[in-house]
Length: 234
Image (cartoon, rainbow, N blue to C red; front, side):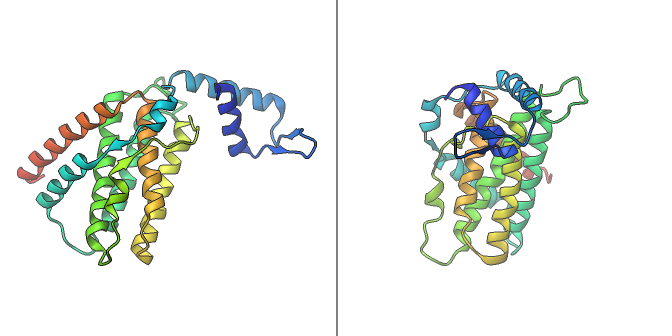
């Protein structure tokens, strides 16, 4: 799928471009406005990594990260009944802090769409810590034989051809709250929502040219820092 088709599909989803029975398309936007949006999206996509079909098919092994997160959670040792709910709130905050670092909506800034990638990766990794921790907690909180954590030992990049950073972060942010409600209010396993979150996380990372090795390295560095913080009473 070429860039033009990807952009058009995004706009169809966002602005409801309807196809008529005779094959014509009915646009809610004027042709001039549509062309302007197409041009804006082209410029944005030029700055982002083009995710390949091979990358979309890659399965990322999360077992090591789950094991490391489990040890960190043991060190923190917060056992109150509201811990999963609080972790969902924490994840929601981290998602939005990472979104803020992208500069993707700050049209008033000279750094519009030009993030500090080191800070962005750090915020994304903070979100990954809570995402892993939530899966671990839900897995241990259930009394059934449901192999919850087994669903997440491997993750893949979200496959929908979305190259709008703002749309991806909006999806991630709203999905966090949806998953929280499912689990906290109804004790329903939010498997689909958590899979979406892992997929969106990896898609955002790859759009900014962070590889799986970059992600693992950054996670290990932050995990080590978090242990030091716990030892110092942070």
